[in-house]
Amino acid sequence: MKDLIRVVILASLLACCGTGCIVATGPPEYETDVVQPLPAVVELGPEPYYYHRGYHYYYHDNRWDYSRDRRGPWRELPRSHWPRETRFKGAPGGEMRGHERR
Image 1 (tube, one colour):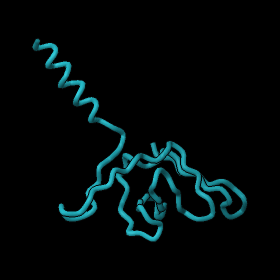
Image 2 (cartoon, helix red, strand yellow; image 1 turned 90 degrees about the vertical axis):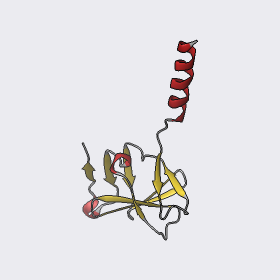
Image 3 (tube, rainbow, N blue to C red; image 1 turned 45 degrees about the vertical axis):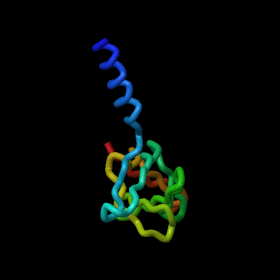
Image 4 (cartoon, rainbow, N blue to C red; image 1 turned 90 degrees about the horizontal axis):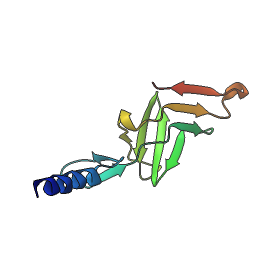
């Protein structure tokens, strides 16, 4: 019986674990956002914006911000949700620039 209870509790805890991050967006009365991690490699076009799963991401000054609307307001994306590599297609000079995070 005790083993069954332990299994049920463990299964409940594991079911609650996900890959999303809950980020508070302001005072407690405001809603919270569940932000999914970005893919391992993000390739940006001429503009430093990326859209993924309902959120807009903005890459500037070697950091990532996110928002539900491209016009903002922007919030800092937790480092754990950054891509491992950010690529730029159409970079000046026709070359690919890349930034890796290890």
